[in-house]
Structure formats: structure tokens, C-alpha cells
Image (cartoon, each protein chain N blue to C red):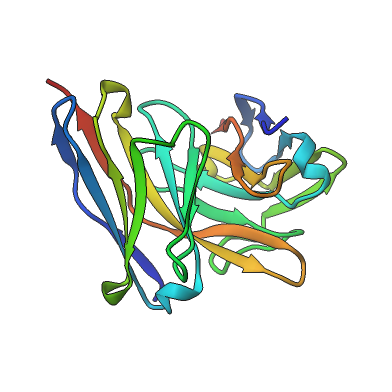
Length: 108
Length: 123
């Protein structure tokens, strides 16, 4: 399958930890990258490779992977983390890319 | 700084064509591939394909063959997305995004992104 599946929505209390998962067969072979998108804005890279953050991304964002599942964890969620999050990876052929279905994170 | 700046919003009638531009600055344009991503209203991100900025060779995702064309003008560090025979369902924000790659770890990702171009198809 070339699909990446994410939970549609998750909520987290302010300051608590939330994990967003991305499932797909291709994740057994390829790294996922993660993007944050706020309403009306372009996506922004938050995690890439094994567990790397671009400059400017807070260290409360981290990534991990096991088997066919990649995860993005926000430790100590802040109000400004409320956004849609998308994973992306190569498909099973390795020649194309695919986005996950997206997860809306609400910070309570 | 590395930046991608896209052309402005477009309003087109069904059957018309549109050409969206993505101008790169702050890096060597031909050293990084360029991707196109579609986001329909209220929907998720959809990868449309990519273009090799060194050779000009495009690769299209399933569902984006035929009416969609990726092209380049390397003299002005600009990538283009042209959509012909526009339909109402082409109404979306279109993003360009550069591929960054770590060959050592066989990882790649999209960074940065353009600001997006809204294409509205309506009679």
C-alpha cells in the first residue's frame, strides 16, 4: 500500500504530552518527515530523518519510528502547537512521495 | 536566506489554463529538486510530483498526468506548474517545496515551502 494513515484528531491539555502516529508499509523502509500547518499558512517542517529538528523548531518536538509506524511527540504542548500535522514519506516503490491523512491537534 | 516565492492568486473559468510560478532564491536552484503539492479547500496535502531541476525531467503522481505540466526556467531560478482544461475540482492552493536530502542516511524531506497560490476555477 502507498497510503499513510493518521488519526484525524487528538487533543492535549496545555503542558502535557501528545503523540501523533503515522502508519504505512513504506515506513518499514523509509524515514518519515513531519509538517505543521496552521490555518491559512503554508506547511512548516518540524521533524526529518531519524529525529532531527530544523533550526527554530522547539525541542519539545521529537520523532521516532518502529516497524510500520512513525510518531511525532510534543512534550509539554503549548497553545501555539495547535495545528494540523502531516507525515510524509516515500511510497513502497521508493519513487514517489505520499502524505499522511493529517491529524488536527487541539490544545485544551 | 533560502526562500520560495510563488505567484499570486488566480481566478479562471472552466476549460482555461493557468501557470503558477515558484521563484527560488538563496541557494543554487539546480542543486535541489522541486515538488508540487495540492491542497483542496478543507482537505489534506496531496503530493503532485517533482521535477529534477538539473535535467528538467518531471515525475507525476497518479492522478496528475495529462493536464498537469511541470517546467523550469533555470535562468531565473523559477519552477512552473501549468494546469490545462481547468475543472472546478482543480480549485485548491498549490504549493512548491524544495527537496532536501541526506544521502548518508537515505532520508529526504521538503524545506522550505512556498507561500502557496490559490487557484479558483469558477464560471
